[in-house]
Image (tube, rainbow, N blue to C red; front, side, top):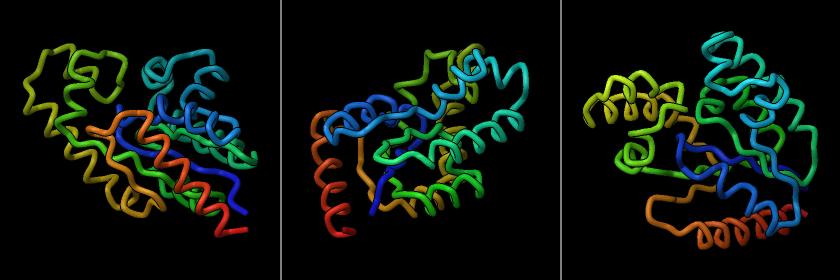
Length: 182
């Protein structure tokens, strides 16, 4: 029986917003992978990237993902880059079902253009770069991750869909998948 669903998508796709609401509707627990790491290391993701480097973060992320994948009846929100690590992808596909919250580059740009708490875009925000510089970087990252996103068990576009509607659609699809699997 399916006992875990993982939310993936590019940053600002709604994983951390939709995840806890969806878990509540299902009567399940919710874990935000980045928040679990931040609590365990007593640092923000930005600080971890700055102090320890991306390699350290990705290694710790993998260990934390494996630990969370041992829990039942959970919705796990993945970090934006979690899916692009092959080991992480294998853990996810072996232990549950993947939900891709799809968002367009234009919407991502509008949501991150003034935020310095996003490690991958902090330099562009601080340098007040153009929209084209942001969109180029977003498109390059999305292309790298697309092959993983496309293997999701459920895909839903979050560009113009209200949060409540998205949660309702996902809850129905999850319940159908669980019923079909039991």
